[in-house]
Structures are given as C-alpha cells and as structure tokens.
Image (cartoon, rainbow, N blue to C red; front, side):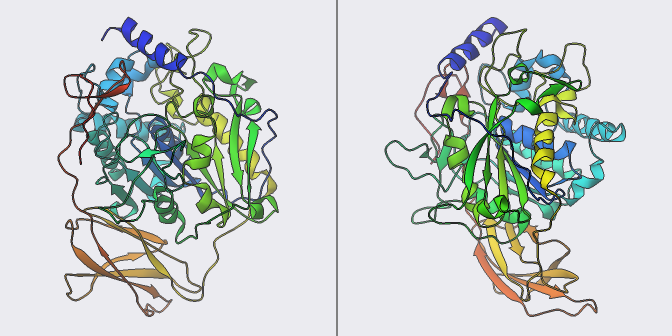
Length: 505
C-alpha cells in the first residue's frame, strides 16, 4: 500500500468518528491524594498496551505492575520510529495482521536490539534503572481471534520481559477466543451495550468472554491483573462508592518546560479519574493508570472505556485510584502529529525528524512526561501505606491459562516469606518456589490437567505455617488460528485481504 493510500485510509477512519455526545462540560483539577508512590500499576489495550509497557519501563522505580492486552515489546518500532516516518514497516513488524503490510517477523536480533536500547537508555538516565524491572509483576493477554496485533507480537513481548523480569513474575494468557479488545466483566451483553461478544472486532473494542466452554464464568481480566499486582481483592457489586471525575489535562502537557496545547501532542484537553470514596476522604490509596487503545479515546466513544473497562469495580473497595488519561485523534500535519485513530505514541509520531533517540519511549516523551505530571499531582496529598498484614494466610487462584497458573495471597504479620508447593495428578507436593512478594506464576503446565497447590508462610526461624490448599484445572490450548484485519477496509479479512465473517471457534 502506498503512503498516499495509507494516509487517506486513516483519515477516513478518523473523520468517521470525530465526536461523541455526552461529555461533561466543566473539567475539574486533579485532586491531591494520599498515595503509595512506589506501588503504581499500569494497564493498556493495543496502543495503550505499548504505552503501558513504555511507561512502566521509563518509571520502573515507581511502577510495580504492568498489564498489556494485545501489545508488543518496548521500542518495537526501533529505528523506524524516527519521527514516525516509517509507520508502514512498524505495522508490518509490530502488528502483523494487515495483509497490505507483509509481515516482518520480530527476530531474535530485533529483540536483542530492543533490549540493548533499553539498557543503553537506562545507563544514560533517560529511563529508570532497568534493575527495577525485576521487581515488577507482568500480566499479558492475547486473544486468538485478534487479527490486528497477532500472537507472535505478544510472544515477543513475553520474550522481551524475560530479559529483565523473573519468569515466575510474568503471567501470559493466550487461549481465549477473544478478538482485539479490552476484555471486561463489567459490561453486560444487551441491546445498546458498549460491549461485543468475545470474538467480535470493532465498535468500542470492549468484549465479554467466558473462561472456557459454557457454563464457564465471565472472564474478569481486570480482576486477574490487579490481584496479580496487589494480592487478593474484593470486587464491588452494585453501586460504586466513588466518583468519576473529568479533569483538565492542559496543565500537564509541556515541551521543554513550556506549556503545550494538548492537541499538539495528540492528547485531549480532558481526561478521567475514578476516585473511591475512601481515597477522597484522605485515606492512603494506590494508583492504577489505564491507557485506552486506538479508536477508544473519549472523543470517539465517550465514557465507554472509562466506565466499562472493568477496573472501577475492583478499585472501589480496595482503595485504588484509576487514572484514565486521554489521547486524541489528529491529522493536521505539521500543526499536529499524524495520528488519525487516537493512538498513544509508540512509533514516534511526537518526535522530530532530527530526534533519532526514540525520545517518545523515555521519561522525556511528551505523553509519558505529561502522564507522570498527572501522577505527581495526584500524589500531592502525601505518602501513605495501604498494605497491612493479616493474622492468617489467605490465598487465591486468580488466573490460569493452558500452561500457567497465577496465585496470590495476603501478607501475613511476621511472615518472612512464603513457600509454594505443587502436586501433579494426586502426587506428593513438591516445593516449587520461595517467594517474598504476594503473587506467583507457575509455568510449564500441561493443558486440561489438574494441579494441587499448597501455600505456606515462613517465620524468622524458617518454620512453615499451616498450608492453604488450592486446586485448578488448566485451560485447553488455543486452536490453530490465523486471523487478519484490514486497516484500509476497517474490517476482518482473510489472508488475501478479502472481507470475511469467519472467526476461530
């Protein structure tokens, strides 16, 4: 596809969804709250997943968890990101789902280049010390009907994290029949709903999936990720206690220390923040940052993403503030960047042609720096601690895939660590790990196989407490599936680029 056709295609997609009714008229200032500044977590879908990885890497000393749905490795765009000039090659390598852009696989050499750039930027102080990445929990998701960002890209993200994060701190779910979407348990499938069935691509890109064949429960991606980061949580059912505030993003967008009109950085004038009642009352809270995907900005979908991404119900009763910064669609080059689908900058559209450093992915990137200023404002009420020890160990199975299990437990007063044992097929429990944190991911499991886990505390003398027993059956492996999506046609296609309604079962 020529550059002219590509530009025309994206312009049509942009113009088809410029505005949405129902946006509030009077944004407020971000509140100054009491937060745990070193326990920030981030999540994102699609371009938001790339941004979550970038933000979590740039500020790894403060970020303790990253959830990425349909994303790829840090600095995937590589040298093709210089001023966003080679977006066609970026799509071919870092999305891989459009037949108009023949796939350029992410090779081992590409991954070496990405990790080398990460270490080099760390050494130069452009991002936080990469040693902090080893403290993060990483939750990854890819649906096998996703024809926009294909499975090999998600696999490459897992491989990139393997260079920095211990394997038992990375959970990767990839066996659901989901299309390219935020997977939510907070959006009922009914007429007028903001959500799609699991294997549908499009609309607001928010889908409802079950975790296995009927009558399996609705899959709760937000709950799985947040509990992997923070330990067992309680989900609010019914009315929420807090408020969704619409705030002014303008003060936080700057270039070289001077105010910059947000649209010049492809950001909206307004963003959203969910503040639980306890946080508004001054109690210590934690912060989660949620990055929407392309075509999910409020200027196109209104409050669909901020209300139905599935995060607020988990945040409400667990003292977690959720920040929803907003990108904006732009086409008026050179006055604004060329970003007609409202994507977050993960291929350099905010960098100048002479800026060959990949600035957009560092702490100095226009969007990353703007969101960090928002974090600093939110944390302006002081430092506090949320996590308190419990007298008795409570453990929970929070997620599973065909080859992994994710466990989480409460911190216990006086415990020096935790031991996890596993018994296969009714056998004798074998020690699998000694863990200092409050979650752990087991790997190399067999699909559709039952396992039994025991979690025990360890005291200062190395003595073990009573076991909490957990059992699960792993999921079935994903079937062979090769979906595609045409950016030009804005629809699911086959490998030859012909529109199709077929999806993998």
